[in-house]
Length: 357
Ligand SMILES: NC(=O)c1ccc[n+]([C@@H]2O[C@H](COP(=O)([O-])OP(=O)(O)OC[C@H]3O[C@@H](n4cnc5c(N)ncnc54)[C@H](O)[C@@H]3O)[C@@H](O)[C@H]2O)c1
Image 1 (cartoon, rainbow, N blue to C red):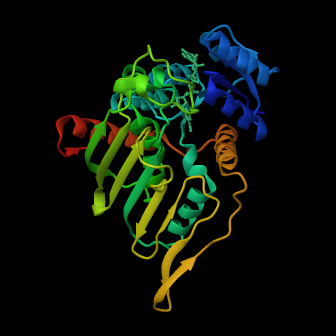
Image 2 (image 1 turned 90 degrees about the vertical axis):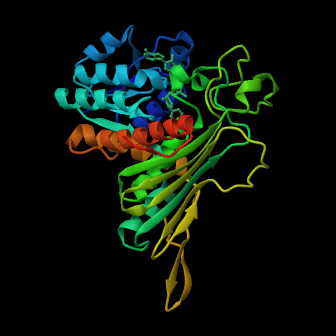
Image 3 (image 1 turned 180 degrees about the vertical axis):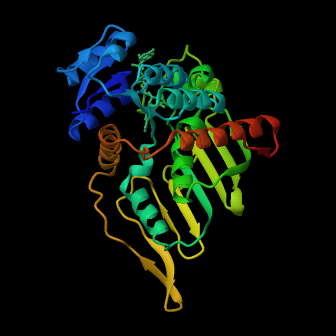
């Protein structure tokens, strides 16, 4: 039986541990330098050995893979260290904070002969999977445009902490939320090469942190003495090989009424298209039949889309460890998303369209 360890027992490390256990992939060891994170993990997973160092965790011969669930700047060093120790890696999003760092992870994966599965959990949500099935079945025809959006009115994660410190996170909602949106869009489009990017970023709320009206948010309440040097809104247009485009909007905070703007993906296909939130339970394909507009509403199970997506991701990692092969979300795909993100930041700084590296 294959077993795994968890590196980083913070909020999402604990989610990984729960879902691995649910799908029959035993978590037997963990490591986190923060005592409060270890304590919270131990309370949920009393049977898991928390090791005194990452070296001790990676030296364990009963572990085949690890989940790397640490702040973004540590994805590269800890993924590389894990691969070099002979472990397969389920790596949280974003892959890293630069394309160069992604390349170093890919090089480490190749030389160690170990695999990286990207933590692109949103593409495993039932509505996204159904859209993918419709696309593969030819129901959409050529997808020529995707509008990908995530809007939060007050949703800066841990304002003042690592999420809002560029040196640690690599950026704001573009790298935090945009990564999910871009991956899901590219996945549905069949992973075309992104050629050019034009983007603008805005830092409105972080600059006047003490006036930010906080509501409950991931990573806790604001630390007004902390750092916020990242954007809180991004808008971008990406041009792909073959002429298709992606319009991206990702927002942590804005003064627009709740639910005024639809979240998720709008797919414009020559034969059919749809608009849905990533966690939606239903999906309607707008198409034509017998010469008139027609809607197709396929049945699929989506009782708890979030839970199903996380279970599917853990199940895929289990299968990868047991049977080998290609991961469902590859490091190459993680790099492609990072390349688009890097180009959007460059375009925003240079105030013009730029080539994607
Ligand atoms: N897939 C998703 O939907 C999703 C959601 C939230 C966060 N994330 C990603 O998960 C990662 C972690 O986010 P989070 O919200 O859990 O953050 P978090 O701050 O709650 O947890 C991060 C943990 O990493 C630990 N850590 C720091 N340095 C470490 C080291 N050298 N070795 C081991 N552990 C170390 C910290 O002590 C902390 O407990 C980020 O990359 C984030 O982008 C993904």
